[in-house]
Amino acid sequence: MIAWCIWVRRNKLREKLPVWAVGETARRAWELLQEYWDVQDNPSRTSVQRPRQKWSPPELGVYKLNFDGAIFESSARAGLGVVVRDAEGMIIAALSQNIKLPSSVDLVEALAARRAILFAQELCLGQVMVEGDSLRVITAINNPQKNRTQWGHVVEDIKKASSWFQTCSFGHIYREGNSLAHSLAKRAVLSADLDVWLEDLPQDLIDVFQSDLS
Image 1 (cartoon, rainbow, N blue to C red):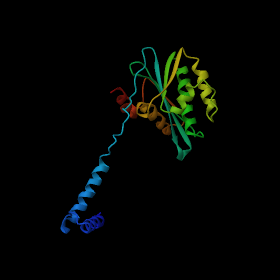
Image 2 (cartoon, helix red, strand yellow):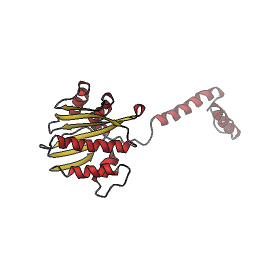
Image 3 (tube, one colour):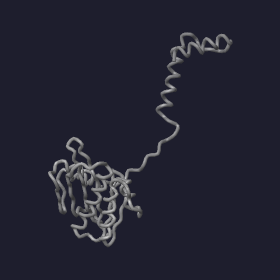
């Protein structure tokens, strides 16, 4: 920047234009550099941030199932997490299951969604809402066309199983609104197979549960 200021000062002198004193060159260079930094720190376009999404309770008489999957590459395993809550946000049941690592992340999420549906059937729930943070899986389930992806057979299983309920819907939620199911999926690394809790949660997830209600 100083070299550029010296070059500019020399050109101004050659053209007999007003110019700063030689001793002011360093200060002038610093001021220009400061202006550049100020522009970088304050971009002219304001970025739009998505509002934080939180878990919300279902309607009275409906149970909400949140599911998620986690991958444990070091052990070639994966975790499935499911939590069932009522209209007051209270825990009906939860599970954490450790499975062999499937071939893709989407397949893990699809298996978690299917496990949620089967879990709801085991609990004999009549009306359910199912939420997960995998937009690809939720979109595939809601698509009436036959799914022809590598994990399409799991999606078709989910569609068939959903007809068992009086009402059953599938919706997408961002990760921050799916934190309890996500924590249950990650907790599966501690399980040899399947852990189930009825009207309860493991103590290490109580804080996650309470943050959803605040």
